[in-house]
Length: 359
Ligand SMILES: Cc1ncc(COP(=O)(O)O)c(C=O)c1O
Image 1: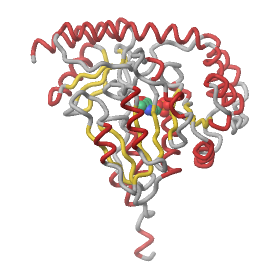
Image 2 (image 1 turned 180 degrees about the vertical axis):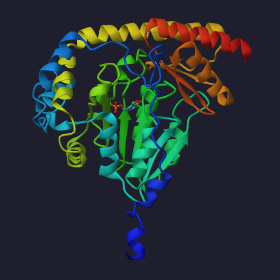
Image 3 (image 1 turned 60 degrees about the vertical axis):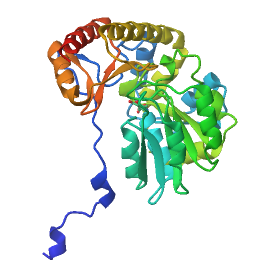
Image 4 (image 1 turned 135 degrees about the vertical axis):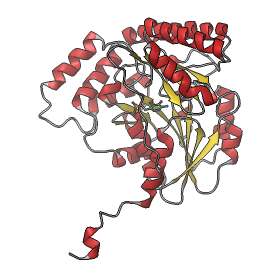
């Protein structure tokens, strides 16, 4: 045996600096999970049936081109089918976007704190993350993001509304930003929570991407549509970008169950959106109650609220867990709490009220 045989395989050094993705904690049998921004409702009957029917053929590979889903999405959003690219959750589409644009020596800009996968997928591609701190109002600091652009910048993520703070960017501010970004840099409008927006000043990215070849929109079936466990998301992008996404995606990534359930969800959209409306009403109720308790809250346009608790973050998360709700703490920063079932929200509110009195 030579000395080199005893060494393990050489892994890319870039992996050493990559933080591990921390999923929301699972709930125990006697607690509610408010840690992953999921939809609390069970699948709609038609959607469940479509998935069950597809399960009968899972000895076969899925349709690699996701033909029916792509056509349904193209019709739903009024875009050419060539502009639609699907993937196993929008996070995998986001990763394909980075792999398509950035490699070693290149930079990817995003707000921070924002969706925790951005720095991970940037470093997986070997590129350099450029996080730009949020404003004091928990919003994207678009001026500073513009100032962070260099000739190495290849991609900018704009999370609208932002995960985990829920704050959304208004049209004028976003358009001024996009006008100022050089046209050879891809701007990804990550709209994972689009369906929960009620502020009319927040633009729909699909209206914005149309005449901007360097802008693409990221959407998911995981949140409002309630298909988090099936893993399906998509981008709407101009043809060169969408074509690159098809090249970098894992072949056969989106299962037939996921494809058929997503098509059924789009067809059952009216019923789904009634549920989304109920969650938005709950968000309004929860936010009003928190404000009444004395919490300073940024306006959330997503299916969660954000409490900046600093060094009390873990204490608060533990108090919630003891009371029966699992929330998502970001140690030293704050806690993100998904709007869930009314009973779960009530437990969270009661815990927040008791905790507030101790502060
Ligand atoms: C802003 C944002 N983008 C993308 C995703 C990825 O979701 P999925 O991969 O389930 O589509 C999430 C999930 O938490 C998110 O918060």
